[in-house]
Length: 418
Image (cartoon, rainbow, N blue to C red):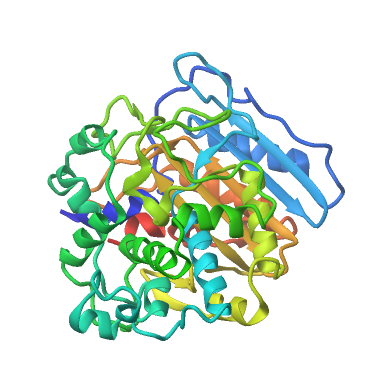
């Protein structure tokens, strides 16, 4: 059943939805900063409301054009109480964490402690011994060409049978990164090391986190907090130590393609299963700040940025080192990542100069039905999300001029890549 191929998606946005009616009015919770000439506030507000009206419980977004900023939110953070979402809410950002981890590794490359094209076995011989350790390089981990499989099926075994039972059963399970890696190494290989196109695997970035720990002598979370999060000036971003989210946040609802009906609230969840591949908590505004700092050369130097933005085809996307690119016809090329965990999806995209940005978060996941082949059916939410992102990044391009199907596929590539 093709649902097995969707399992890697739990750390990447799905943009899949149910058709549940929301308790709050369609425009509840919508807010925005005073509009600048370059940011069309009413159009952004309207397109965000349209996402909620299409069936998404809650959605919030931050848009920037140079120094001008717009933020908005539409819908509910809690379906039971009708509490509205607000633009400043914290969110589990899933695979966007991979950019943070890649930055940490590139910083160590700049310090001479790691070589991108060195075998990973040189650093972690006990973890990845033998031929794999000799053939897989650090670069292959970061651009998903290692051929190492994903650990998700082993971590949540019921998913292979089309059941979401293990999502609930493993809610408070604490799992060590080494155990996740062992699961991934035991999974069927996705190809030979270095083969292109690559295959997206969360295991790669758990290994990258352990590599970072080996060369720095610190926990990856400690290093990333000090040298990436703090250095970028992020005030509401962290790697969680408990199953609870600190600060204002929405409840996070998971449908798993209708198998959880009504969608289950997974706001409280032990995120050790995501590790350095997807455990970061942030806000949409912080994500924009992070990618501006990265693309502006404040976190790594030009040579490292050049390496990060050298892409290869991976699961249908142009993937660099912890960051991917998206070409919007008539508008330009944008850089960033998307991410999803159970109940929460996030996307962050920036122009290469960091001037035009959008970061968007949602609190309902895998809301679509599956067709007879096990593929998710297109849902109106998918189109509405694409329209909002186009309005944010390409205000001068008519919506009819953008290939929404291409954009939608890109936004949920992590879900469809396995």
